[in-house]
Length: 177
Ligand code: SF4
Ligand code: SF4
Image 1 (spheres, rainbow, N blue to C red):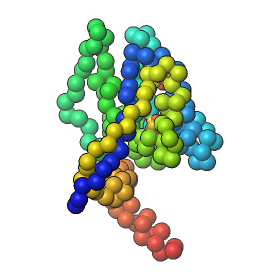
Image 2: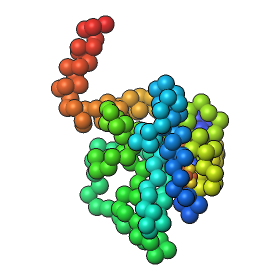
Image 3: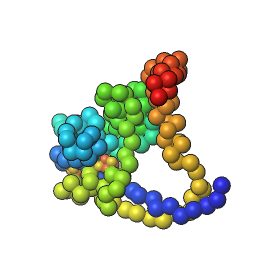
């Protein structure tokens, strides 16, 4: 495997500026709806705002990697006297939370930086500038990203339905074709 240049895209999150308006959730779920913009259900969003209005806590979190296992130990954060829940800052789609899972299929959702758009839409829609977009170039090892994504999707389906059922379904589909 060789080295190649890769653009690293980052959304910088300033939680202090977030007012919990949830515009980011609305536009993210609308952009990823089928057909595009046909619905806006925050449960399908790849960014979720962890909200606790009584304690004045709003933490926007973009969906990261799928993980089949829950953490055995968890961290609790206290920042400026506010105590945050154990999973507040975590980006994982994991068995212990409902965030970052497609509500109908249970498939993991992952931020794709609004593929095809010149700027992430959640950043564009955030009027308080809690979200800002940054790009930088890095040398990275070449790897099969598509293959990796396919494997993650299959792994989560196997976790949900069991390998036998998935194999049966694949066999049925290929017989149809
Ligand atoms: S759009 Fe910005 S201010 Fe509104 S919830 Fe999202 S991150 Fe917070
Ligand atoms: S960058 Fe796009 S896909 Fe990622 S959380 Fe924001 S709106 Fe959703």
